[in-house]
Amino acid sequence: MCSSDLNLPNSLTLLRIALIPAYVVFFWMPWHWTNLVAAGIFLLAAITDWLDGYLARKLNQTSQFGAFLDPVADKLMVAAALIGMGSSVFHPEASRVARMAAGGRYGRVLGGVLSAR
Image 1 (tube, rainbow, N blue to C red):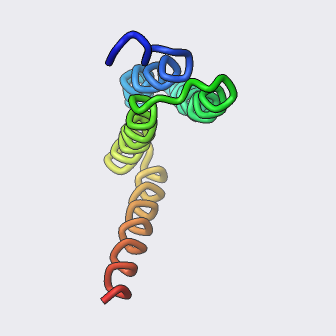
Image 2 (spheres, rainbow, N blue to C red):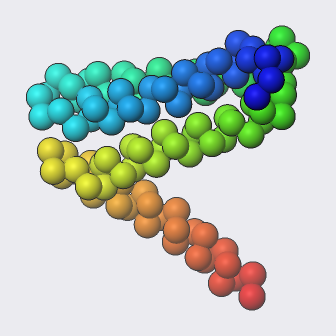
């Protein structure tokens, strides 16, 4: 990463990656109020996801680094959420939802592969 890659949109993407450990910590805390904090962190990550793309286009600050890092940050955040919910002891209803979401996603991929043959 060179200094020209550290612009506002890429900084927001890096912030989204930095929010992942905070999301995981608050998700796993056993107190009820931490659910709202974890949801707020996830919402903040979603907003920065939209905002970094908007700003990159609006300010003409697109870069190869940002084009690579943005989807990686998305996948890391969603993976952290699905893994947390899928193995959650504190949130059994979230565990079912995560398993259904992952199953649906893999089911669509498998269906697409099988129909392509």
